Amino acid sequence: MISYPAKLNLAQTPTPLHKLARLSAKMAGPRIWIKRDDLTGCLTSGNKVRKLEFLLAEAVANGCDTIITSGGVQSNHCRAVAVLGAQLGLRVHLLLRSDIEPAPVGNLLLDQLVGATISHYSQDEFKQLDGLFAHWQTHYAQQGAKPFSIPTGGSNGTGVWGYIAAAEELKADFVRENISPSTIVHATGSGGTQAGLIVGCKIHNMPVQIEAYAVCDNVAYFDRKVRDDLRQWQEQFAPDMALDSLSINTNDQFVGPDYGVAPPEVFDTIKELAALEGVILDPVYTGKAFHGMLEGIRQGNYDKDSDIIFLHTGGLFGLLAQQDRLNF
Ligand SMILES: *Cc1c(COP(=O)(O)O)cnc(C)c1O
Image 1 (cartoon, rainbow, N blue to C red):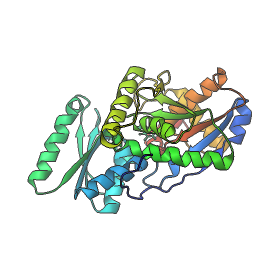
Image 2 (cartoon, rainbow, N blue to C red):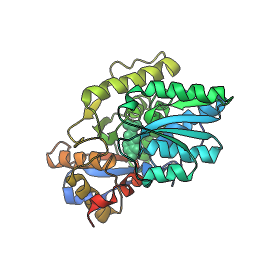
Image 3 (spheres, rainbow, N blue to C red):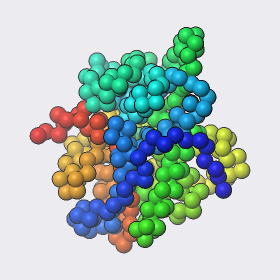
């Protein structure tokens, strides 16, 4: 048995699991269910708050008063940290990546509204991200503050716990609904959700395939990143656990033009699901993964007589930042 480290109760959990009945009928494929981790909170919505329950518990336990973290300019993770910092009375400093002067919309608007300190860096400057973290760590320490750094996406050994806990929640969902899903589908970006689900389903004895759709990078990158996160987690928390046999199943066929940039068919999928089921996806993460899953169903990759779970990881504010691409 494993024992969870300390956590703060920051997420609205358990989140709902429900069937997408009209979409399932329309696709004539497997029964499609959706796990609504877009409902983990209003301003803290999405998957990141599950990791932050453990990461911020560590920060608070260490007496830290300043959180430094990083991400893209429309990062959902950075928005969740900024909002939680304001709720917990912690100073937040965001290191945000963008090559153009960013518009104060979507997540960035919320970051500003809740009073986060923001430093903007180019893609090139972000190549020295470790150095930027070290610089700001020293800066705050010299001021007598106690800084705590959280990596991009909250994906590290501690962050892995978020989706180990979510796997346990899903197990209870499956018992309640009396289903044994073959597959859990989700979007992967910094790898922590993927790592947590993979090891979480092993720990909780759930014989389900974790299928991650990349929204950036490629299969080799996620193999390495997920293994790194799992190795860190194991060294810190579970030295006796054998992880070598875990399979990492990433699909990089739906990344599209770039991180944060989706092709028109992803926006069509977002519109289709919104009108058919009243569920809103985003163009950076969930839209790409959901579109990939639907293509997989069309290609017959899923048994028609099975249940599959789409994990909705949030991202609504990222859609609002790209509203012109919806073409209404
Ligand atoms: C960050 C994010 C993901 C990817 O999760 P990782 O743990 O970083 O791989 C998926 N969906 C949304 C909406 C996100 O914000």
